[in-house]
Image (cartoon, rainbow, N blue to C red; front, top):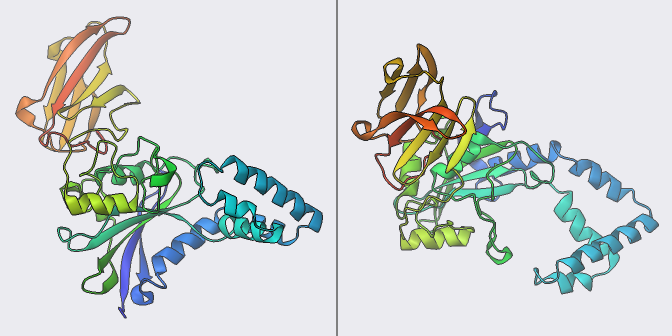
Length: 348
């Protein structure tokens, strides 16, 4: 049994709060994993599951009968999508309510496999833990957690068919609410499962391990079909086969932030800034660097930050254009050094 401590991180959905490093005890191993328990308890405490559990516990016989009737109606509506619907309809009221109580009022969480263990990543698996009811509770979008998911090559665009969804699937639309991320050494052949460190530095979507994850057999979601694998088994099969695809279909193809719009494809990233009608090239200074960009117009700095990937500086350029119904725009085109790679963010 392993002993000692390990580090994992907490990524708040609120961007103004820093990513935190947390120390856990690795002695519980897989069967009594500290991180899994910590995440489940955190999401339980911050949900209404406790109140729902108390309400079920104190429900009158009439209320329980009404609830069971409502559950049967819901199960019937899902009969064509679930192979277990008919079995559930044959259960008595107490058994049906018991299943609902176990699923809806227990401490649980959604687990997303950022990487699965492979020989290329030295059998290191990275998992993200988030609230399994994040969307029904309308929890806020977690930009940093989603960027990390995309940096590992996962698609967040398409909703998969029910038959393909399983533990480990990347949530469509990205991560909502707070999230935890941890790493383990998982080698079935060597009979090893042990928590290892995942640091605040590892939570950067430009970290080296993310680049490795996107390689064929690297454990991430970068080697599958255009939509990406939508289940843990699909991710395992994909990395075992090491199938490559350069498609950019993860929902990070365009966007708008204060002061400019952006778009990206397999070859380049484009930023468009609205500028005054009399703006000329001599008023514009654009500084391209391998990992950063600075744009100044008429002495005012419009952007100055880190790029989401490496730029091919010599091929990058900018133009001033007259756009119909919009006026003048400064168009900055950044050529990607690694073609086919979707940047998890454009500029920050």
